[in-house]
Length: 146
Image (cartoon, rainbow, N blue to C red; front, side):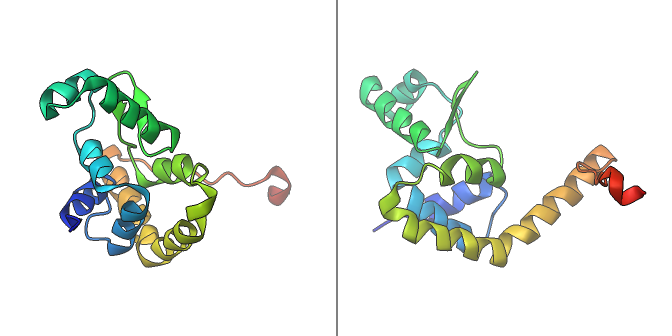
């Protein structure tokens, strides 16, 4: 049986705690083993191999496969998860294999209408509170001002 708590913990990393529609996306895109690995990041393959008592070469190949599918990133600290849902969406959605797009795309659409809009606004409001200025500006087209 799949431990759904793994996907809930991973959803929390993306500021989507409690979003069942996002958990469904994670379940469709990550195997349980990949989700567990993602929860251990940031780390290098060597660090993870020592911590998880796994062969470093096998682990490196798994992590590289996850990078190629846009599930995680390679950065200065080694392998890292995406910082937010938008980054994950933009990186992973274009790399979804053709055979599972029929399943994945409707899940993202459902997530957008169910939860993503609320999460985006909540994150913008939080940034405004902590920074004291908005994170986005609307710049009208020059012709619109004439």
